[in-house]
Length: 100
Image (cartoon, rainbow, N blue to C red; front, side):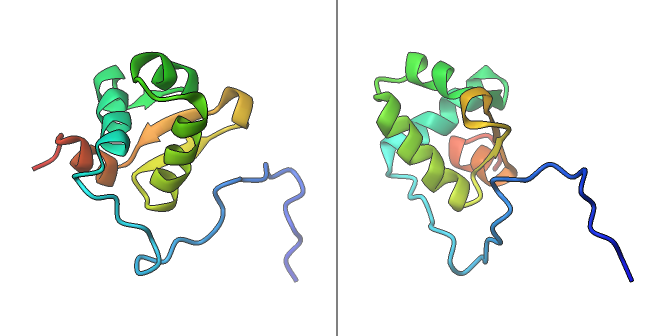
């Protein structure tokens, strides 16, 4: 019998993402694309605060769009919401125009 690992940190992104159920972000969705482009310009890893400062989007709109981007597999949200890192995935790099 295997024991549960009680020292494991709970992940907020542990929900399984089925490729068919993932929302596709259109290349014509300028606001979401701006978020991934800014994240790419910063080096692929950023914070919500940096994205609000670098875009003309409100904090609420950045939060909503980041969740959609995370659900679609374009970014990974790592850590606690107050100190969370936003990391582009390969799919996010492609949306930002970095991978051809």
